[in-house]
Image (cartoon, rainbow, N blue to C red; front, side, top):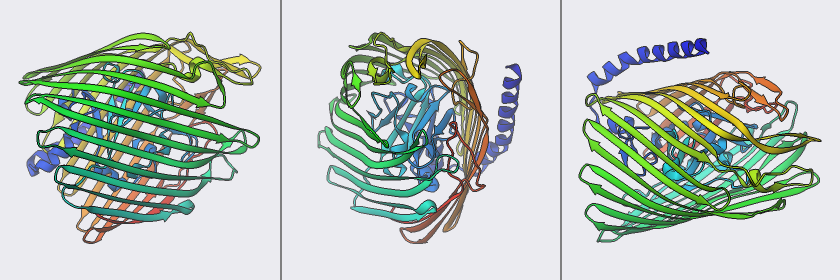
Length: 614
């Protein structure tokens, strides 16, 4: 263990020393405000209120519109892989089952939100990341660390929030793109946005289809198609009141392999919301949001089919009061989950009521953030979570932070109520998994450079694990605990025509009962994104390196999955006003790798596209 930490510390030190000359050069060569904004962006997910990254007292990563445009990923998991504290696994490429692990926690211990609306499967517990088209989103915020006191259940490892395209001033502004490439892949997208008077609007659509690649050795290609649509409309009245609506829907199908037999998933991912915001004075605003999210999947096998449709309806009220340099947030939330399936569940709906409060106090150079939330769920009872963060500005460029937070992961409908014909069953007496986390961090923020260092430990009790019961059946048990320790170092440079983003992660996610590393987690990760503007041309690359991981079956037997390094290349050409062409080559070295046992990811893949619009 000491050796592992020593190696991690050496890597972090080398990273910091390599970045130091860049920091000096950045301070000496530029004072561009646009670069400062890009490197110290506004973040809303961490505190429910707009704060610059250094003011959040959190470990945050923002993937802005320029990043998404340059990298032009075919999946959300490609974008998230190797980001600070983030690990990704998948059962193959192009719409195959994927999981996102934040700080060593499981896929269902972190939240996915789209424009403030939670999206997940209430039966499986986690989000279906593989069915979201990156072209439907303008930016992403990754907040690492517990956020149970703000968002309730499942925010143990962190929160990923995706933001759809906002309306542009004036207009209408059209945009579209078309392209294709390897594996007979075709991608199309179009959008229209603008504003008139106090009304803002944004509409978009996309379609992707591909023959895919084999997910097992010597297997057949497994195809995927996805059609997505977005609509956003908002109106601001003269008095400052605002109303708006959002609708995002993705539908399609994905072929996969089920015990060596061909199978198919038809899916729907959808979020819909309306809101009204009212100023109650110069320093007080109140907002009410009504929303619904759907995760619908129908599995078609050779001799059978099954359907799992889950729906979450939420009413949320937030009230924000400014008191000089201080800010107070009060809120309440009511959420109702319901499921419709072809399998037998003892209970098919449950509701959750919650109240929460947060105070953000500024006593420069000191700052304090404290929050607390009370949840009452009809299935598993009451939970109280809280957090406290302290910050100290050493000077205008350097901030120290320390935080403590608690969170819990709610048992899913599968964990509690699942029954099937083969004897697998859930346990309605399960309790939520509970966690407590400590973090120490420091950030340096310069005009064209930043670095952020975080050390943390998370202890999780009452882990729910499905274990072998004999006769090829399984059931959940709640006896495990986990301790996850880690170090993260992130940095970025935006100077002259160069853009660099770097992330180095070391994680030690240990099952305290067995001493084993948690399932499918890599312990070490490095990601470097480097881009250069050359007049009308741009070139860039992403280098992602991850260490080995282990996968365990129901009996506890392990399989070692080797580490890997991936190189992605890209180039762009602005050949006319508003017109551009892009080329991306993913896995350029044609590396064969797997993140789950016996499932292969795609080899080298090239895609070319033409784009019009801003």
